[in-house]
Length: 263
Image 1 (cartoon, rainbow, N blue to C red):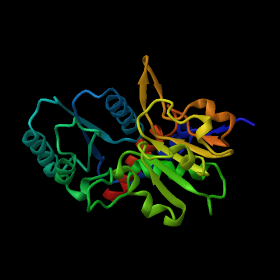
Image 2 (image 1 turned 135 degrees about the horizontal axis):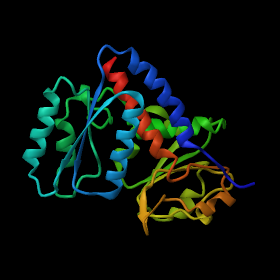
Image 3 (image 1 turned 180 degrees about the vertical axis):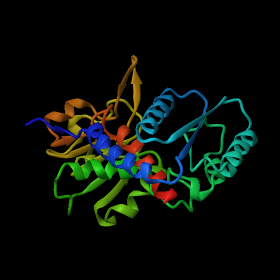
Image 4 (image 1 turned 90 degrees about the horizontal axis):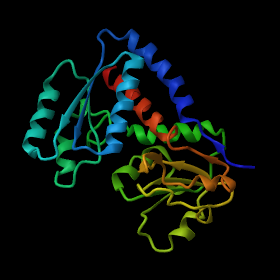
């Protein structure tokens, strides 16, 4: 049996409808500001998805495009302005930033009560990316108890929030630089991959009947592909596709976080 596809778009649309109903009950129309620095194609794609989702649920969307030759001080001034703007309820810095900027310093400039991405040390919410992944896992209706979960990511920031939501005894973290990577990934009942390498995970690297969650977004010849080779479907039990998997779920949970901090 080929792997079943976890339809993130279908799940996201259902949750967006619930968010729309919640937004309609709020006293004031919420405002979300997204700051995009540089011209990363994947970041541009995500920005458009966020704007579209905001339109669906009745949230005012404000985008701030900043050239990558802008000084760090100017970026901090923009965030300071948004922190003080009463019409902005949530602020999001589109990651990754160009290498010359101090990502941690810029994120810490956001007021914790306006951080809807869950990256600020004092944030009141959990990363929407991680929340979306948990929802995708729930949608399989598989018993996740006692399953070995492996997170393959080169970013510690990405892996950290899972500690709050999953039993630590079940979770292990890997970098793509790990030695014996193949032997490690083959032990995973659930493999979550976020390394930004197109079709990196092959069927020889996974366990039979594994659940695969693909967080990667890579452009190859004008086509968006994930970090997991779809040929893994012959061996896996479930796989989240790219596009249409983690992406729409992340955007949806971001708006859920926005409503949560307003309430």
